[in-house]
Figure 1 (tube, rainbow, N blue to C red):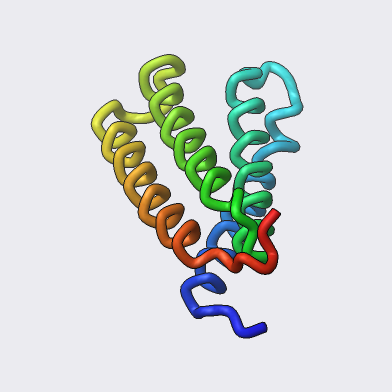
Figure 2: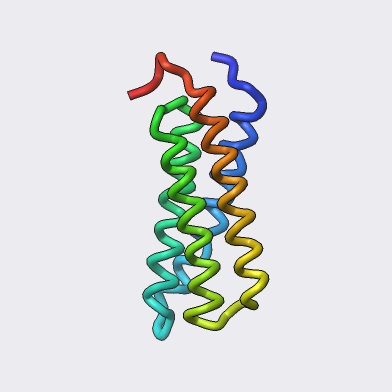
Amino acid sequence: MRRPPADILITAVLAAYGVYVASYIPALLIPPAAALLLTGRVLEAVFAFASAAGVWTGRRWASQTILALGLTIAAMWLIEAFVLGLVAYLQAIAVAVLVVVVCVFSARYVKSHHHPAHSL
């Protein structure tokens, strides 16, 4: 089955992001790391890998996991800024909005181009 280049790109970016985020998890297991950071990074990694697998296999639910990933990333940026004080407020707001916009467009693309033969 030939996959469109956009599907390959989206899958590669999602998988790479999953590996990137998962690389933080071992360091967050050492105290006194915030449990909120650990939980958020685990959710990001799970949603990124699930989204990559869903896009690659053409599953119908892939668009929903992309949206969940975007919301999780945006929430983590806002938590890191407003709750934990780790990043600047305006930067966190800008990144959160950008992530949500990119994920919404990616999810719409994936939803409109999913492969019905592989959908569950």
